[in-house]
Image (cartoon, rainbow, N blue to C red; front, side, top):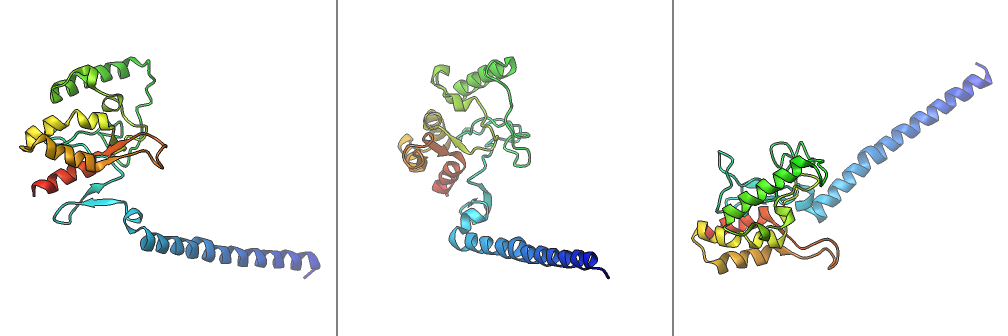
Length: 204
């Protein structure tokens, strides 16, 4: 066996050992370490930020919105309604996307006007009171948050449908209002999934 062949064989053996070592350390060891840290330090987040009802049943995730509609697709008046979703048939985690329609797209303009009329009638408010997030989808189609303005105009309708006082519903809403991140990033929001769950638990 000549020197060149021995050198090539040695290099291949070194490369193979390095591959095996880094596969074990980075592919397995690092993955197990990060998984362990996540489970110990942030178990809720590591497991999908799941939310449960009073019986302990998983009813969703605080990171993914839901449609609160009847079997025929009509919105349920006893629930705060989320913003529209362009993900599949609505809030489909396997089809996250926006509509990709520009602000001058005729279909988007028509959809906005239709949604605005429907929301105004459903909540008994003027179309001029309806904020932008109530009639437009998020870029992911999965955002569970709405603006405090959109939540606020739904308070009367939800309280009437549930037989609760406006103050009771307003109190739950105030508890679930979230300010800007770090006090200055983004906009104030309300998580619709968590808000509706809190309303259901209030009545249980």
